[in-house]
Amino acid sequence: MEKTEVQHQVHLEGAIKILTGDLSEEASRAGIDNQLQRWIEDLKATHNAEFHQLVTDLQALKALLHGGTYDGDQVGRLLHHLGTETTRTAHFAEGNTRTHVEKLGAALLAAAGQLQGPSTTPEQDLKHNNQGLDTQA
Image (tube, rainbow, N blue to C red; front, side, top):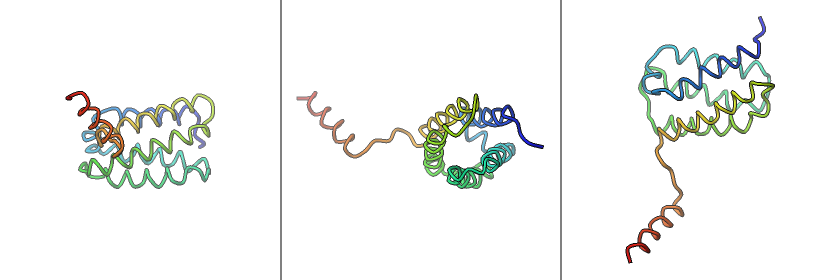
């Protein structure tokens, strides 16, 4: 049976719900494996080579989250990469599905930010430090 666009959207919304919830709680539930596997299968079904890295990253995420314990920084980096790739490839989605994919990309990046914390470049750190010194003088 071929999946409909609505089914794809339901899978995307399920992934968004997981990412916007308590990730550590979601990771401890058996259902996260199923959710990630549906997402992987949806991507594979498109037969689009642009999605290969997404599939690979999702399989890695599934392995990292399996069992409910995970390295937050490692998962955060992977979620950030998934968010970037999802956003980059959103234009391949058709119709209303594109909006769901764009929301998923944003949810992935937000979840990554929660796990990784604020990230700045060394240049940004120096700039902020210099600003602090200027205001103290």
